[in-house]
Amino acid sequence: MDNPALVDVTRGSLTESLHRGSVAVCDAAGKLVCGIGDVEARVFPRSAIKAMQALPLVESGAAEALALTDAELALACASHNGEEMHANAARVMLLKAGLTEDALECGPQWPQRMEDAAKLILADETPCGLHNNCSGKHAGFLGLAKVMGVETRGYVEPFHPVQREIRLVMEQLTGDALTEDVCGTDGCSIPTYASPLKSFARAFAAFGTGEGLEPLRADAAQRLFDACINEPYMVAGADRFCTKVMEGFRGRVFVKTGAEGVFCASIPELGFGVALKCEDGAKRAAEVMMATVIETMLDLNDDEAVLLDGLVNPPVLTRRGIQAGHIRPRPEFLSELKSALN
Image (cartoon, rainbow, N blue to C red):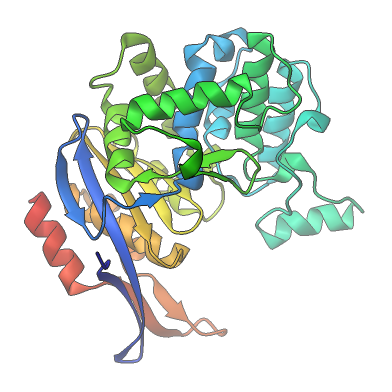
């Protein structure tokens, strides 16, 4: 099944590029409310499911034992910019577990913003694992390993107890068997498992509502949801889609990006979860797709409408900051969404 073109990139009055994609909206029982494109195809969710990967940290009691704050739990769910506050928070998470940055197995990464990278260069320093956008997630894994009393070395390997716990959680939430033949290696070296897009939408509906979850898991999901809503800057950082949306919607929406054009969201007031993928992996189109879904699904106040308008129709700019075109949802995408959701 071919995925339809969902996003246009214009220059002047002409369409210069197209982005194809797929979108699944489900309730917590797995009912497909809206399916655009091939929502049965397996996709690697990448970082879009970090909040679910953090569930064992909370469920096990490890987060409480380590006295993790909202900011630190949000960082455990984050794909952050590598700003100083992100790196420092990851360091504190490790210290609470009696560890240092040397325990991280995510690899070094330069901060995403030029100004943060420049600070390291001016200090004659190089990036370390703390600056990796996944350092909070990895600090959470290490904290879980310490509280479980298992070896921390090799915590990224598929058969390490921490990764086995995470795989079990993902199987239970998605309803999908995560076998070796659908396993890959994520950019931060942990296993990543491909599931149908609609399975991730179902999982995020349950995550945002607690419906169908055992009380312990529902409480853990609520704890992580609240932490990310309370500390959205820790989930991403300056000038990032996830931070802007969660700051602007104040608990109405949880949203999380992943690499290669994946996005997931929970909309608790509707009981829905959303999972989408831009087929060519383009972040610019995936953001427009998610913003369009949120705009179509929710009744917006004035501030929310202004925020989303800039995310649904971001400008294409010249090097001088002059608008040359738009990135925008295609009319067919809007029509199909409105037909399915309204």
